[in-house]
Image (cartoon, rainbow, N blue to C red):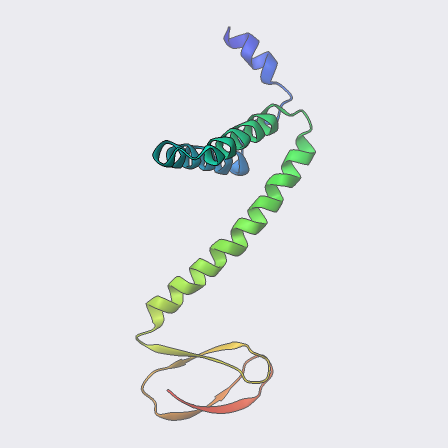
Length: 131
């Protein structure tokens, strides 16, 4: 039995990060369906499961790999914003964050220095702000 399963799965794509996301989305939407009894959530969960199994059983590995790379790029963009927000929250006691008026680059300066002249590291414009 184990050998037959191995032969069946040989050459197929299998699971990846996008697949894990789809399974998690299916579980969450099924839980929401059980609580709310709105059939739209059931259909969304079913669509996620079908998409997961289609990708896992696919023999077109290069296309599934490209899909996973696109998913990882989007995930990295979203998680990068959350990481940036987290570091700003951690540093807000000791630093102030300003945007350069000319190029909109974020500049970090230490708090408690009074009025200071800030030089943008990107465009080298100078502006005065209270730290």
